[in-house]
Amino acid sequence: MIWSTPFWMTEDVMTDPAPMTETEMLALAANGVGKVDYFGKRGVTLVTMAEIEAMATLLVCLGLNPTEPPVSAANQPNKGD
Image 1: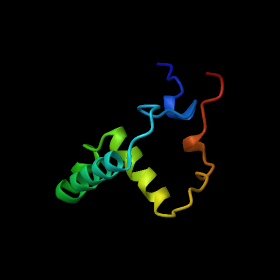
Image 2: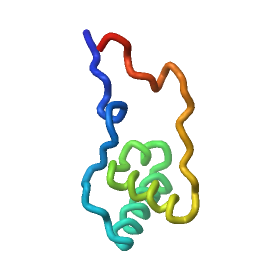
Image 3: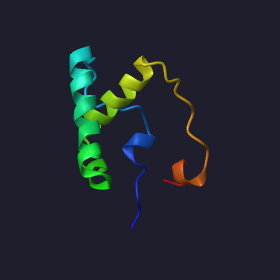
Image 4: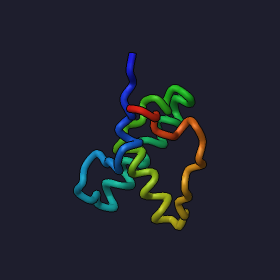
């Protein structure tokens, strides 16, 4: 079976190009954190992309500086695809 490059490795993709309001960001982030807090490891699998984006955006708003992901074979696109 030939695997294609996952969409997250090909371009920057967000669920909705429209910016979210501060209220929406806080509500989505709180909902995502609540799932992880309540369900533990199972909660991680229940968090939506919108909730992940809201949590990441909130961390940046709180002053966390994003860093480049480490370069490894695991996050490199397949050669020859």
